[in-house]
Length: 253
Image (cartoon, rainbow, N blue to C red; front, top):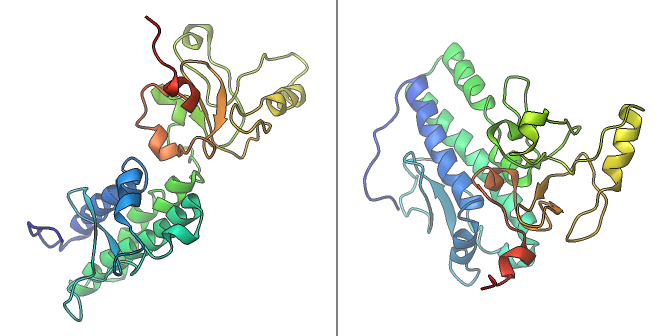
């Protein structure tokens, strides 16, 4: 377990800060650190739990021996199901339990320090404004009108929605978030037909607006995120994406 004790949050703002820190740690475990997390969840070991800490770190460990525990405990035995499910389904299951645990910890603090109705409501609204871990891991997170779209920060991926075309000045330095097709004056109906004609470089299936796609910066082919094991959350941290084929190519002298 964590070596350095963290200060106990006592106000709505402090509880929310604690929530965000633990959430960030769990998101790292299930996205950017997923290989390390997968290896640590050995089904041969005893019951293991995934902990997120306020300092945005995570840890796989045995449950605390203290009964009752100081804080609500995460789901027990997440390692046992690892090899009996597809990896994406197992990660989704861990994400759901992690979301539940975060809420339990936040409202444990609320109960412990006597949050009233208005304080509990405000805390929930602050938490509810953030995407759940499950939404981020599965790529099902939906952008609200107040949130910038993924391609606003130079990314080249998309989970759903229509394809929008960049201006001439933008087009050179940015790949679109779905397989781009030439726009035609015949309108939206033909644009949708063009999008359906694009295929995944891995499985060959057609493009669908309800799926997450990512483009290789080297060969400029498009792929389903699930085919190359990239989630929207993981893609946010990728500056230059190389598909598996381009990653395996040797540099020619």
